[in-house]
Image (cartoon, rainbow, N blue to C red; front, side, top):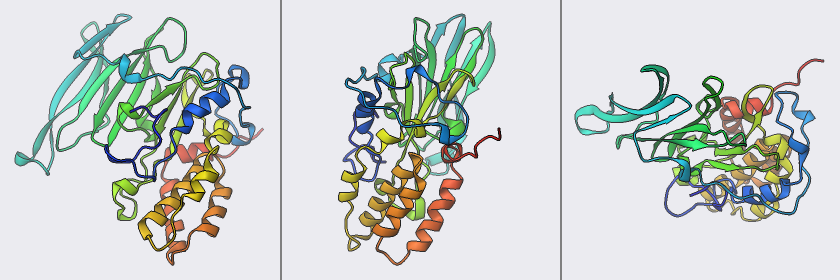
Length: 320
């Protein structure tokens, strides 16, 4: 399933709960963004400097990153080889207390340049896939690596020229799930692909079932000056909130406690991760009708403060 076309991502692989971000809007976002921003990368600067992109007419082609992943256990490009390796790790939930898991290593001349292992394991093991895709445009491709387990995952994108460097690091921002949930599209028409992944910060939040967990969206844009992908939600905030009024209308009443809580919080987090935190909490104050209002807000704010994507979006403006 692609993050760009799915109506929603729930934490389950089967029926979609209405708790996840409206990730189907990302394809619409691509259409809205096509004539935008004349190829400006997102700078690591004051959030206030970023403005919504203007409306455009046509969407670029959506990319299924899975089509670029190979089945083999190794892949060579530009003189470098990425290989899949296996090791045993402790896992209390399985008989014998150990399970075999996979990770990847980038090598040159028989020596390891870097390993890729985010600790994405499960009692059923995990999987590692890799491939090549021109994230930065042009003929040269970059290496993409994904380490996945059920309802979890981590991705990296590595440029191999002139020397290896990680240009997208999902684990550094604690963002991403399986590779099927990694959205790739040139949203602003500048020839460089944006990356969209879910934020799983709220897994297990207040003991919720995974199907009720809101999964806000983190959208990354390549910053040529920084030489890597950085969160760019503020740049696309007008489009990320395109369907928010419709989503508000779907919030159930307080008589269904879990559904009401998750529905309200999902909208709040859409606002928050679009850079509109005040609007999100104003909606919360008006819409949430259960007696734990103050406690839920306190717990949510604590979870947000622990999230690297949130901290990046709301980083203080640099002094001039």
